[in-house]
Picture 1 (cartoon, rainbow, N blue to C red):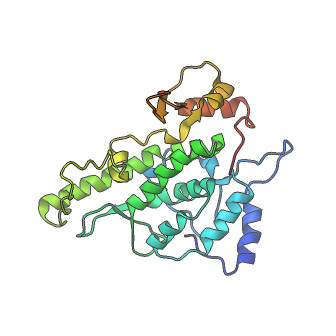
Picture 2 (picture 1 turned 180 degrees about the vertical axis):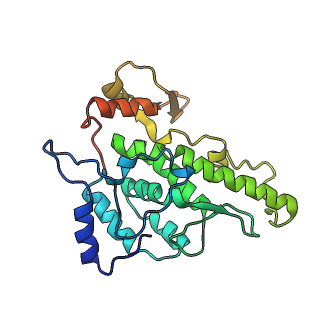
Length: 270
């Protein structure tokens, strides 16, 4: 959490001065966020693919999210727990803000844990991963704007890198005896990946482009008959077969659509 403001009034005045401002076209200018009068956090490899413009694309929604996050507790796990209460776009942006300075840590207890220089203690990485996977699916269900989806998919690589580092550290700890092995699952046939556990899903790269699924109508309205990046079918019944078809766009298609017309998109239900 960024610190340095002594009142909400001071925070509000600074934020309004430092965030995006309307242009003559009625949109918001892309201006890097400063997020207060504290130092800028160092950038790591985890932040390499997060677009700089993502900091200021949500207008008043981002201001509300920032004020809410400003009041959160200083313990990392408390902050992670509070992310669960945010609306879709705000939660995605909050994870994008948090991710660059997360570092893996391996205590004696088996599990995926991280720490952050602006928070006390450690946090459960799987809580972040589980929420992030849920938000990806929610982009489809809530018909999220293209900008929101692009910020989510920009985290594909950074989140994988954090999990990959944690996995390597865990294996080393298990080998040298500094980490206690996990208790065996009561079901011998249990599959963590099939059950949707965040660590298994992300390490298997089944997380990629989850935010870029669209209904058939949405995809056709944006890209016509262009080849898609994949499909997903659900709602099978013996009588009617697959009841729902979702089409996956590529990140390049999203960027092209936004470049073609910055106002292009689908009606948000947020």
